[in-house]
Length: 91
Image (cartoon, rainbow, N blue to C red; front, side):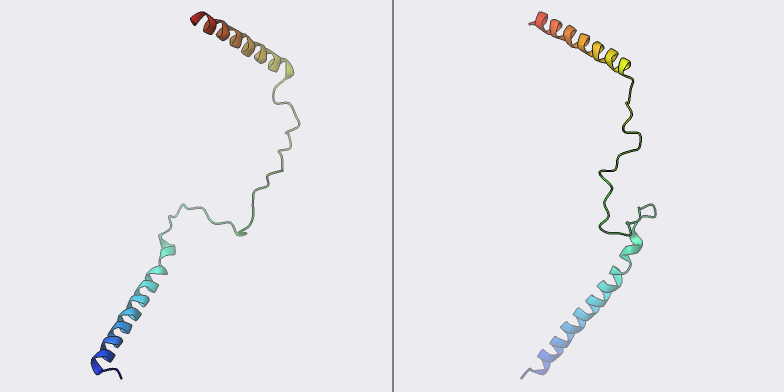
């Protein structure tokens, strides 16, 4: 059998654990209040993803006219050739 001292010791330990549990439980209910006021709200549907395959309606149109594109490509090719000549001369 348990002695009287052991029983009192056991009750004190259980009481301390109960008090700690209640104290910690009271703190956890206030954690939701600690979020910043400008935080974004969570989506209502947990498994919703953004539509990946939906393209904008004007995606079929050319971004720039073909003549402007040809001009830019010619300028880039000329710059590449000048850089190749400058690199060859530097060696």
